[in-house]
Image (tube, rainbow, N blue to C red):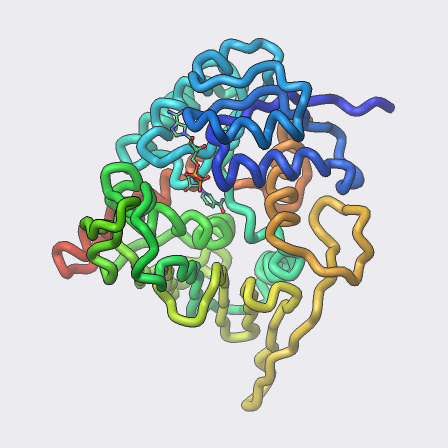
Length: 383
Ligand SMILES: NC(=O)c1ccc[n+]([C@@H]2O[C@H](COP(=O)([O-])OP(=O)(O)OC[C@H]3O[C@@H](n4cnc5c(N)ncnc54)[C@H](O)[C@@H]3O)[C@@H](O)[C@H]2O)c1
């Protein structure tokens, strides 16, 4: 049977725009997926970025530096948008109002007010699938951890630690870019950049923060600009949020620590989740991407069991079961989860993309975290 084609436009052709396009180019990698996304249009104000796309995707219907022109193309069904945070609100709302499905990048609005406005536009278009990007949970070893959680093997939760130690900023001579400027990146700093990644699994498990105490740090206060002149670098580098949360499974409270760090010596793009419970515990980190670690609490002594998980992803692929899985595979699996929902609203994909209400909850948390840091107090979140 011929598979349905879904025409995609990409707005923002930088780091993530190219990663997305590359995933579409090797869609033959995936088995058992009912639709094929086809790259049909590209948009970025940086015209030099078009060349790579033109070379590898010769059949584009449109290349433009004005996203409104792309949104006018009727043949385009869905948009992936990866632009700086100050542009999320306008471009996401215009995309939704143009009647196109959207996979938007985090933080899904530069601040809470922008996110609220995006969610209002979504409410006016219930026929559309709108999701937010987050790829790390699609590592097969992490999918194993998610199964462990869904089966409630942890008993009563003691503590959850979820974090992203990016560490891209340890080089103090690295020039400043838009991700280090409050005006473009947003006041959340590292939380807006990295935070949604750390919250996808906790929120999906229903672990909502009831309160937060936040400690934020701006370590690199200046950085060179493109000419080498030292200029202010005004975003938060590191954030540690200590939350009180509640597990709907047991209705008991527990500690949830969310760490987003651009400066964590020794780490490189290390995303991790650790769950500690009275009956069992589990850990996953991209530092050991094959390893699903768990332990059972049966008596006094407890030892971690480590299982090497192969490439058995949520959507099966052509890759042999024992081979390794990587970042590009996780991005492709995230897109596949989106495409599954586009082709069937009731898709039974085992772990769907971040939803708009989950982005809203992240904005409530980051806004409360700023208040906590400035006041030095624990802040209670409205339910
Ligand atoms: N999911 C992830 O792992 C991940 C990783 C990095 C970044 N991101 C997110 O992706 C988004 C983009 O980040 P990036 O690292 O790709 O940035 P980038 O700076 O590499 O690319 C930004 C792109 O936006 C384009 N752009 C700027 N203004 C525009 C406009 N008015 N109209 C159209 N295009 C415009 C630029 O030309 C560039 O192509 C951000 O929201 C960021 O938080 C996600």
